[in-house]
Image (spheres, rainbow, N blue to C red):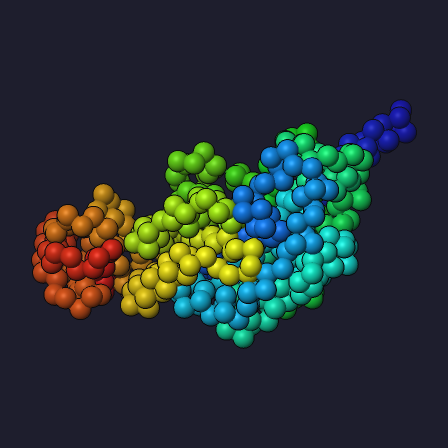
Length: 428
């Protein structure tokens, strides 16, 4: 009787036991999380051979044959690309990190990968490793480099076709073991050959129903962390964070908002990042000139910080390697503002107040009120004790009274203290 039950019990134990121990971030990883939270502003760069078509990064998904699409590589010659100029402009904007699309859904690698000839060095007349140049420029300027990596591929035949890239002319031979090995080897290259990489930003998990498809995502995360234990990992899956992730991202919406229909997930306790475009598309689209104003983008940075979130602001470089002039204009405008008011954004947490007039950020002994409603000249907030000092970051006087009985601070603001955001610093 006992022998009859031994095998079923062993099988049950094998099936139900976790394949991996619960993720335990290293001390270095936790330090990087804290650093990441303090950045508050980064630049996203969507750039690949899709920019040659000037129709956005999803152009191949529009029923284009993969072989015809791939011919764009032979015409991709971004002769005006200057990594040092890019990074200097981005640093001037006040951004602290860059997230670069190493490989998007079209399967084209923007570095000299040994895993495929379909990359910028071997498939284009340009023949330069732009990721290597960008990494070196980032190290020179003290800007952190993060890498976007697509989990899905619209060209490889071993990728099990999901909900996108269905009409690209592939002859499917799904073999996830093969494809998974390919991804691991590429990730090894990225994490060992391109200097200090601060984070991996995964995308494409949504291409399959994870209830019916095993991405082996924990195994992939464990592998990346085994190479760089301090590495931050995030995934644009529009879900609560999965085991092994170090930050949570929100696409086109602030945490807790869902106007675009992509960010209805609950907010975790991990560091937060929202990504948004300067115009409408992520990759370069010649007809998309509807850029958000500098004032709108500054307001977005402020509102993100008020939620305790970074803003990852996207630019789609042109096929010649230049950043669009409108993007450069916005970068410089944001940089001018942050150079004056950055102390209320960098290394802050979400403040105690979020009202119709605006939001707040906070450090250990400072609360910053960001009054975004230009019509408001009087506001009241609850404080447990009288503040040590209250003043505007513009240097203008700010009238205030504190009622000890009601524990209420009332502020009188001058009109147009700042064109975008009247910032009141309260020492507590």
